Amino acid sequence: MPTLLEDEALEFVRDLIRIETVNTGVAATIGDGETRAARWVQERLAEVGIASELVESRPGRGSLVARLPGSDPDAGALLVHAHLDVVPVEEKDWIHPPFGADIEDGYLYGRGAVDMKNYAGTILAVARHFAREGIVPRRDLVFAFLADEESGGVWGAGWLVENRPDLFAGVTEALSEVGGFSVPLADEPGDDRRAYLVATSEKGVAWSTLRARGRAAHGSRPTADNSVVRLARAVAAVGEHRFPVVRTPALQRFLDVFGEARGLAFTDESLADDLESLGFVSSLVGATTRNTATPTVLDAGDKTNIIPAEAAARLDIRILPGQDDALREGLRELVGDDIDIREGRWWSATEAPVDAPIIGVLQDAISVDDPDGVVVPYLLPASTDNKHFAKLGIHGYGFVPLRVPRDFDVFAQFHAADERVPVDALRFSARVTERILRTA
Image 1: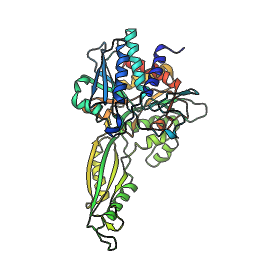
Image 2: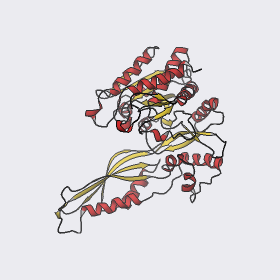
Image 3: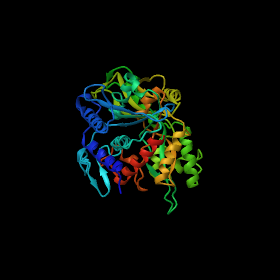
C-alpha cells in the first residue's frame, strides 16, 4: 500500500504543475508564477512547523529556502534544490493539457513532470515527513525551491549566491537534477539490471559572438573584404569542426561500468560506435566526450543590394571541466585573426568527486528497492543551478531517483510536448529520496 509520504509527493507534484510558472526569459512576460509557487510551498511547510524564507530577487521572481537541523553538527550541510520555473509550451502540440496534471495509463502528464516539479514536490513531501515523524537527518538539510533556472538562474540561484550566501552557510554538497533515472545496464535478453546515472560533473555553458567587419558597398560591385563572406567561412569552420575527445573522470567511470557490463572496449577508435550501441543513452553521453561550439544565430545586412560593413554570428558553447582556455584557443585558430570574438555569458564546468561518500549513500538507498541497481557517475552535457552554488565551494550532484521502464527515455522528456513520468516512478522517488536525505 502507498504510504502517506508517497501519496503527498504525488499530490504535491500535481499541485505544482497546475501553478503556471512559465519562464520565457523576457521579464515583461513572466508574471508572478514563481512567487506564487514558492508561497504555496511555504504554506505546506508551515503546516508542519517548518520555517522558511521567501526571497524575491525582483517582483514575482520568488525563491524559498528552509533549513532542517541535523544530528551531526560536524557534518557539512546538504543542499537539496529544485527549480519552480518551467519552459514555455506550444499547447497545440500537446494531447494532454500542459498544466492539467492529468494521469492516464499510469503516467502523470504536464510541464514540469520531470523538469523538475517532480523533485520539488518530492523533497517537499520528505521535509514534511521528517517533521511529522520527528525524524532528524544526520546532516543539516537546506531545501531550496528556486526561480529562473530555465533562463540561467540569474534571478534565482545566481542572485541568492551573490546576495544571500548566508542561506547556504556550512553547505558542502548539493543534490538536484539531472540524473537518478534508470537506464538499461545490460543488453542481454532477460537481463534487466539498471544503471542509475548520477551527474558528478556538468559542462560549462558560454555564449560568444563572432563579428566580421569589412567595407560597405553596393551589391553590384563585389569587394574582397565582404563581411558576410568572411563570417560565413568562419561559421562553416566552427560548424564542421570536432574538438578532440577528453576522458574526464566522470566519463571514464561511466565507460568502465558500461564496458564491463556490455563487453565494450570504448577505445579511442571504437568510442563512437560503442556509444551508439547503448541506444538512447548514447545521445546523452555522446555529447559529453568533447567540447562543442554550435552556431545558432546569424545577423548581417537588411537590404539585398547593399554589402554590409558588419556581420555577426552567435555561438552556443559547451565546455568540459578544465577546458576553458583550450576551447578559447581552439576557437581562435578556427575562425582566424580577422574575426573578432566577443564573449558573453561564460559559466565554467562543475566537477565533483566521482568517489565521494555520498555516492555510496545513493547506492545504498537505491539497493533497498532495486538490489541489482548500480549508481553510475556521468557528465551532464547541459548545466543546472549547481553552476551557481559551485561559487560557494559546493559540490553538486544530479540525482533525482526514478525507476522507469527499460525503453523510457527520461532525458527525452525534458522540454518535450506531453512531458510525462510514470506514477510508480514518483512513488519510488519518494522512498529513495527519503532514505538519501535521512542518511546522507
